[in-house]
Image (cartoon, rainbow, N blue to C red; front, top):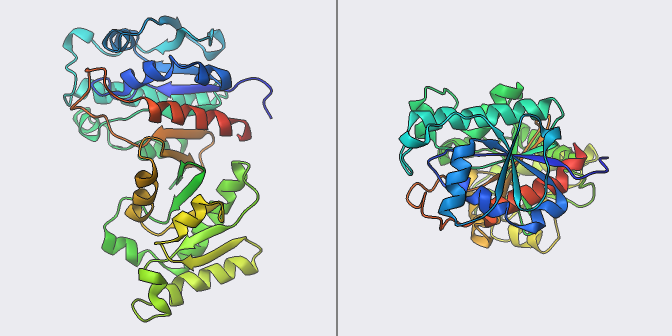
Length: 332
């Protein structure tokens, strides 16, 4: 277990989006420096512009290795990749140069994490269209991280106000998501989720598996997935010694988890868990990517091109992503 504050690499995201602004705002908070050593991976000119846009007076300290950082309030430590021509940057616009730059920030952060020079990564938004314009084949953070680490199908977890939510499926149609609710897949994910919680240091409590149908199908009256797929998977997991319960109606299980009855919930499809967490607190819902060789957290919003460059973007989610990365980093 680490004895000093963890170094958290913070990637700049798409330079034409709000990433630079929410970073400089988050790093103006003393709370961040009380729990970690934030290190920005980005472009010095973009950070300088963001400081001007947000009317903040912070020093920028360019370094080449994480060990050279000052990590003190009032100074932004930065590994400058110098990969954006500020005179050609157009805020809030899809640009190939920004997609390429955003990818390179992630690539550098991952290299540092794999080398053990940073303890975790907190990412800011990237834009799929910008990545596509730059001929980047992987158009999302998770897909990029899969390729850079060689890890297949990393496990996503959301955390907000102490409630944790995993997802049985992510970006597939609702029809496909229902088809993925099989005994084998549910069992596999129960085990993966509990292993992920253990890795984060959460060893007590019960994982709840949400139901798929209204009221968990009422014993097969309207939908038999609970009877034929979900309940059998839960029973097998219990027989293997895993602390799991379910299926539990999705209209109540998230509230119960928020009250502390469950350590986490396995949501059966994308929107089921997203609606529950984001309705509770959109800005403080943070995404945590498990199963990687390092910890990665992320804001759960986009590049917000419509307000980029105006200095009005909220940094609550960015700050929360850094704080959660710092909280869990010592378990990796």
